[in-house]
Image (cartoon, rainbow over all chains, first blue to last red; front, side, top):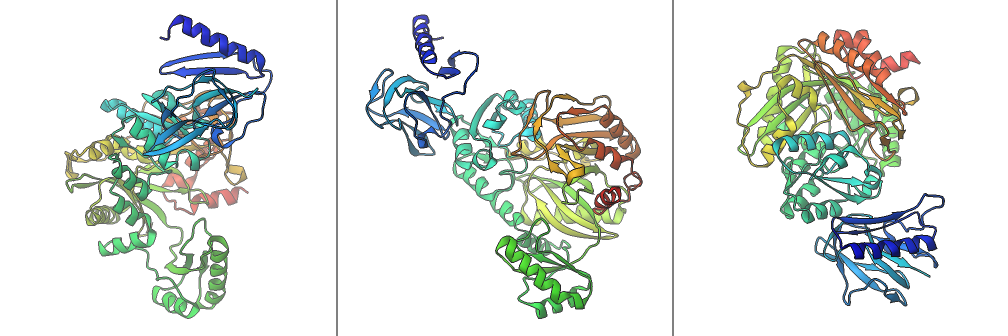
Length: 135
Length: 443
């Protein structure tokens, strides 16, 4: 189980972003633990779809960058950090699949709200990797 | 790993659970709430809804198997089950493909090669020609084979580029029509001739082979009750009114052919039967949809046998140990509208009640509230009835279908009941033309 204070902080941050956006649900997965903050759906989610690496986001919203293939998720070096401001597009991580390194880009600037998968973890198609605040 | 979806994914999962083998299910985003995802030990999403990007996505499937430490992949039927390249890739990555060797899949997957191999093995194939360069060659071939003949596109499928030629004077026009249609449909206008077998029966033989060269057959299935598109709707084992001579010839050809190609794992040889003549049609190098009827009369779990064989175990029994008892009949419940040319239907199953009681088996992935996505095969369930004799099995299946409720999408349940009640089916004297004839007389 994640440490309680850490959980509270993550929930607070997720709730803050939910309040600022029209997103319906935001979740973070770490190993076997998932933290999810949701509200009744009245508007469409602002999440980008799987395959987000190829889709350019519109400014002023929370984007979820998802895995568009199956593989092992690895943070690029220097490792991105939650809260870090990205001025422009940057390679944040890569997915290693069948010996091939498939880069994961931020697709523009923004603030890293959350790194949603563990470095070195297996990720499935569509799995959230990063939450980025584009404002 | 179970590289499939729907009822066959559940079927394989059940066999694995009973063998104490842990399972990984793969699924598309459209199948996130499917039963096979819930029942496997682990599940991994491998792509979006379209099969080409999920269940046929070889890199993601292999990657999942390697990451999660799978030893073997069961492909089920359809999707990658008869993809020789996929079987090769599995082997290249140290994964056991639960099926025959890639070279055998490749040889049997190509119709022309498969027929040549069968002829080498002394198995009767439908008399036919090579590819025909023009009308004179076609005329010579047709005269040698004997009219009526069928002109077929070598790249064919779905009846395109196909013409029946009853008399020599019809040949020229038919040849022009078939080549033009084949060119338009497949960008390949090449055609060849086959002897026309009018309304044959579709009889297939189940085989199992281990890696030690042991081959057995598990009797035959009659799959002649087919839609006009040649998709099977009702299957039974054993076939009714099959003479001992024909039955014995079928078994002999099936085992001989498998020994000839060094066949391993489960497979099915499909034959066309007309009177006492039987001709090899094609081989399916995988488990079949209709395998439960064989399992019920032989008391053998074919999927477990596949896994055991792939693990390098010997069959452990010989042909004389295999005895068929009783009769089994299967109906396919598809999300289709039989009154609208069997158009596939998608939607949500609002309510579902499946039958039970003695001698009934239901293989399905449905549950109340389950989605029927538009992306995949429309089969929802197989209802199988066993009886001591054919009539008992049919009566039991009628009773079972009467108990079955599937609300939310149109299904083939009503049509299956009509077929079971028909004189043709009841008498056992039916062929691949029977259901199309029933449907056109109903119109």
